[in-house]
Image (cartoon, rainbow, N blue to C red):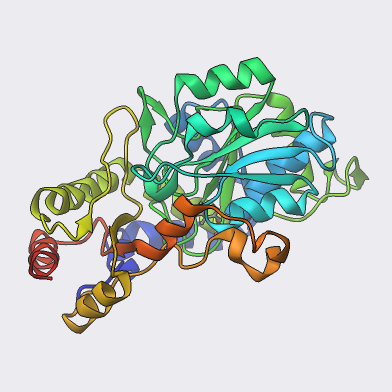
Length: 365
Ligand SMILES: *Cc1c(COP(=O)(O)O)cnc(C)c1O
């Protein structure tokens, strides 16, 4: 069977280095907020080009903490609005509502699956304080127009960079394009830990300082509490693993792009719509999503022929039970994407033969 993603094989490539890293942490007797956190923060700051990095417990917390920091700093308050793509993964929206801010859902562009920047301005109201862009599926989402809107309306530009670590826009890495960015190192992401973890990157030292305190019970100095914070920190063990794996992220992304290239060149079935690789907005193919009118039939056919696929995502946020108040809203582009999208196997350890088999099956469908 061709797996959607073979995590075991991905991490087996670095087995000895990961074991050495684990041993070092075990023997150190220091498991939180130590030397390995500091080292990975530095490495990630250097990689993204962002001056400040704060490691946190997971990607959802990274996004929650950015918004919470803006509230503590007086930039945002209860009921303020944040513009966000309607087809994002639920975590982006949860981070907003968890802070008692209002997500304003805006349709994506059907060609890129990213926020349709031309539709932002009509969604801006006097309560709009920011835009949370999502580099969905690994494709950078950015433009001059977006920066112009932010200046014109005094908006914070935030990035949900859970899926696109390593991608660039005009040479700048995602996570260093806006005012603040959240990263996820969930095991299945392009840079995956061996458990949960995440990070915030920002150019603003005040945001970094506030996030760091908030993630540590709201405290900068032990037993002195500035904020009603939470406990959301990265383990030393995960930081040590991620320091090993960060060295290989560009190579791994290149291997994903090579598989994507095979798909893009090889698949020529008119029933299947391929994703845009993109020139200015790089794609690191966290997910290779195709569209098909008969998506469920295609998934069944591939499964019967030994190819595992997934759907990112089957239900859009506005149709979820937890957001019942939005269930009657209409987002036709978003709904179409959720009905038609299918994620093909994609990973840095896939072989050319496997990609060719997928291509042949799709062309025969
Ligand atoms: C994975 C993901 C998150 C959440 O990250 P976790 O580490 O799983 O909490 C947020 N946004 C997007 C777009 C994601 O893909």
